[in-house]
Length: 346
Image (cartoon, rainbow, N blue to C red):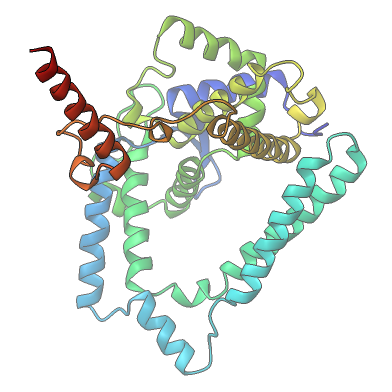
């Protein structure tokens, strides 16, 4: 069973924050005091506009002489400073992680051994992130990095608001750029980044299983009332993730009793994922076997196995099909016999 657990009050707070697409938070200022603001997810239009900000900043950076990430990497590699990502190590590590996850799916009744396997997966995933992140520090002054930073600053300006009126804290971008309290702006920026990245999956999955949220989810499904009160394109990253995990767990709750995982596995994310992977593989094998049996069922013939098949002129195969000599001969003999019989009767 998973050791992860959240107090009822914390779950209630997170559900409310995810539902309204933001959170009210106190941000530290340069003087040590705090200002209360509403940090919100940006709208679809604002995200689209931020892409234009990225492109504009990127083009300007190139004009100012910034190197691209590819040029920087090539330059550093040529000088022997940067050797790039070790693809062989990455492939080997991913293979080992996959093997451990498959093993975990088969260990449904030995909690102690599951914990060891889960820890192995955690350690290897951490190492994988380290391998893939090699060289990030060298790309800090590239055109892409500068453009990405400007894009995030734009979204931060649009995502920090008055907690009561929901008006922009900085009425325009110039006010944001000229903010004298750099400590407050940096802290607000960091809070908005954390919000934009989204809540970790462990927490979201816990919420998706919690009765406090499931009441809302099932009510929305049964009544057709919008889950978050906004259109799907404007869902925040947390809203999308919570909707996904809610559907995922609902599909498990709806499984047949003899197929459903135990409560211990259901509350253990890694064990449940491995269990479901194993379950789906078994379902696919059974489905393939069932189709194979149907195709070779004794006593059942396809149309093409009979002595004669009628193919209309509209069928694309009609031009490619030829009558067999036996059928043609039988037809000719039959026609002659009928004609001769008619002559004799006269």
